[in-house]
Length: 246
Image (cartoon, rainbow, N blue to C red; front, side, top):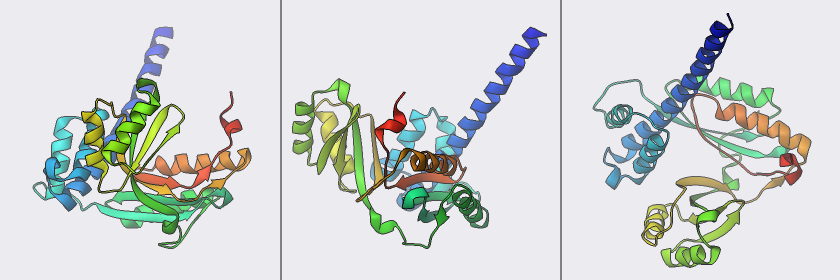
C-alpha cells in the first residue's frame, strides 16, 4: 500500500508538471502565431518571431509545435483566430498594471481578467489609463558573475546601447525597441553570453510599497500571469528589501 501511495503521488506530481508545461507551450504557441501573422514566417527577417522561437526552444517546446504555430500564423494551417488584447488597470497601492493577452475568445478573457483584478484588490481601467507610465524598450540581461562590469560597460557603449545598470546578479542593458537585435549581436560578437533578450514595457516611474501592500500586489500579479491567455504583464512597483528577507 505504501508503494501504491508513493506511485499515486508521483503520478499526481507528473500531472501537475504536464499541465504547467502544456499551459506554457500554449502561451508560447500564441506568441509565435501572432509574430508570424504580423511579420511573416521567416525568423531571419522577423525579429519578433525569432525571439518567440528562441523562448519556445528554451522551454523545450517540440519543434513540430513550433512549426505548426508558424504555419497557423502565416495562414498555411487553419485554426481559430488569435486576438491580441491589452488590459490596463491598477493594483493595490495604486500600482499601474498593463497586461498583454492573446486569446481566441475575447468575451471569455475580458471578464476573467476583470474578476481577478477585483478579487485581489485591484480594478480594471479604461484603455490608455496607464499606458503613459510605460516606455517600450529592448532589455538584454547578462549574468554578472560571468563578466567584469568594466568590460561589459565598454562593450555596451561600443554596441550602441542606451544604458546599463546592475540589478542583483545581472547587468541589465537597455536599447531602443528597434535596436535590440543589433545590440545583442554586437555583444555576442564581443564574447559576452546573453542570458535573455526581449522587448519590454518598462515603467518610467515607480510606486514604493510597504510589505503588506507588496504581498497583496504579488498575489494579484501571480494570478493574472497564471491565466492561460496572458502573455506579458508590466507593473510600476518597488518592493522593500525586507519582503525578501529570510
